[in-house]
Length: 126
Length: 149
Image 1: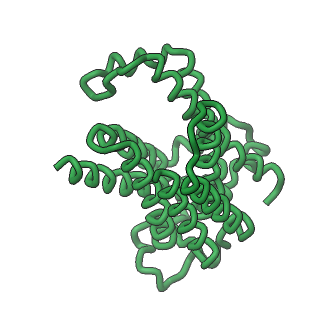
Image 2: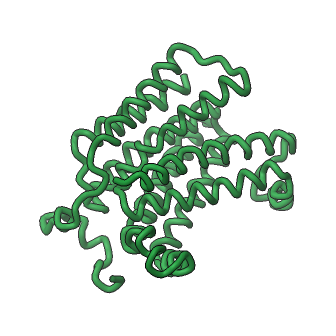
């Protein structure tokens, strides 16, 4: 039963952190290159622009959900299962979601990178 | 990609590693505080611990660098490019906390490093005109990009 809970938590973590990453990435693409904006209008303009982007707040909420699911997941499952499983699945889920929702061109190079990194994360936990 | 942008990517890696290590160090000081929704006061008091406070400051620096990177690079570029943080955490554990690194873990470290090299050598941003593919089904799910410009 504990195992099912741990995997449910892992599922929620992967879903929430992928949603968060996609929303935050989408928001920052709306804001545009912050380095340029900083040079033209100063740091306060950057902060104001980021904070007034509605999807940014949604992204933060999703990240908070992911963080709390991680805390709950850790109370149900082992550190060595929950952290690497959710981290490596999030890498792959992010590649898929970025392609679908952010229209990023995920070429062979990036697929290989995502798979190498996520399998590396799994090995480090063994 | 300019030097400044590579520095921001390095900042993501370093700040998240250092922030996490400081948080872990601080939480060990506090002993077994049961972190849960029922124990909010314990969670709030944890902020007063200097290690935890420093860790939070570094994680804020990490978040600023991360948001900055996402403003000029693809998500599928930033994530693998900054995953060296996993390797750094393992090395900090090995050299500072005398944790043993098994051959499997070294292999994992090598795979992550290879992944980082793979993505960092490629393009960092999908050109705008390629982003707007009319055939893409999911396009309607995202609000129009026009009104915020």
